[in-house]
Length: 215
Image (tube, rainbow, N blue to C red; front, top):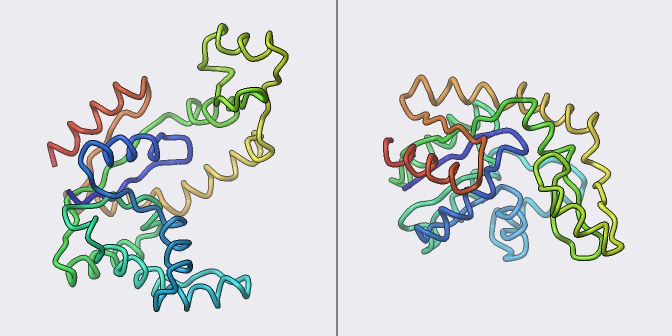
């Protein structure tokens, strides 16, 4: 089970990947985590990435592919993996396909977590953290009882600075410009499965598993 996970910020990729990871015992491999782990381990590509990051520059696609190659060669990825955050561009998708062919681990499917723009905005701008318990809530989707439980106990519903509407619109626009072309890339190759990611976590997970089974 070798999967690329696609979707905008707030589409629930991370939540669904963690559920699948626990059930199928395959790793979720996110770009940031992978990069940090490679640097911490001092691997060949990790050392190259550290020099670039310390200089404040972006890690090149070649080095990222090297880090992915190292990561996919580890034992826990033997039975599959969920790639989250890579590829982000069509060129990266082409390079990834070449790498997976070399590793004899071709991609099974790309799964798009599909959510309307308005729902994404509410998911992201509505996020709040209870100052007392640290519980993550949403002013649009959490029940009034959950919200009141925090405030009635003297807590505050705190919004992260980067969860404001302007910042989130920019993040979604960057996604549309850079990453949405991957949808057509995988569709043309018969690899794309689309999941309606609106609804409860359990309902979406059922759809997610059905999409993977159909690939």
